[in-house]
Image (cartoon, rainbow, N blue to C red; front, side):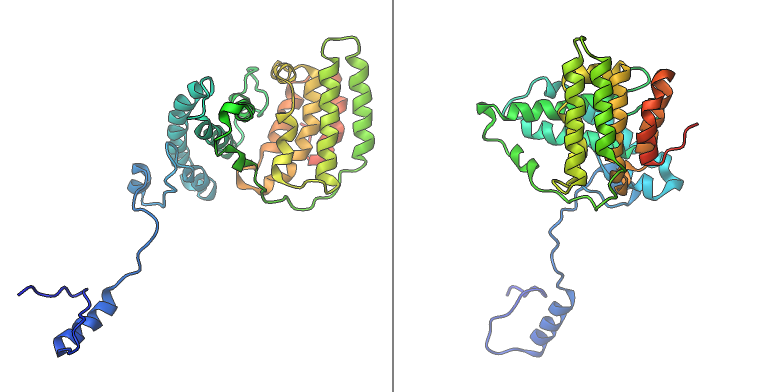
Length: 306
């Protein structure tokens, strides 16, 4: 006769003492099943930490580096390993967007941007430009724009990417920068004057106009979501961004005023330290005769000049 399992439930009308004991044991040892898998990256298993199972990178490493400074080097090394693997895979896909890969590429380039922030400010890297005139972060940021632009085409309409435009968490209310309307009007007048009769005039004035729109959205309650802070960069022309990477003084002055908008994002751990770091890079690399135009944004973010 087959022996009953101690976890099985007998449907007999008569219950023996041993059956009653079995039912009691069943109540003691039955466990609620969990919905998460037991999978995880090998590195997280080895270090016995919770893995978010995001592949090919493990985003927990950078957060752990932030929370546990005594083991920062170890976690940063792990994060860099995954970051480099991801970069190798994603970069060629950006140039080969199609309906099959566009969703994955969009998520990947967004994650890479966040990972770059999470690594913390790096010497010579100032988000939209670098000391060596190249910004890897800006390459990925442009990848987001390229991907979203492609998704608008008819052959991409079946993707899930529009879900990325869903409402996000609003930023907290912040004190309105003193007389920002007046100062941005003065900035526009300056840009209009110094670029008059140059090929860059339209792009530069447009950059100030969009910046003013971003300030109004942020400080007049039009749109308080965090993505608004980076909406200005998203809407800049390729030529303007190229000149910013070449450290053209006019785009750098306008960029310094953009930095004021991202100051509030330092409430998120991955953005901490970036505002002052970027402003210090602008101050160091812009010609001395243009520094007077940095006084207002420097005061707004509380950075101390060297």
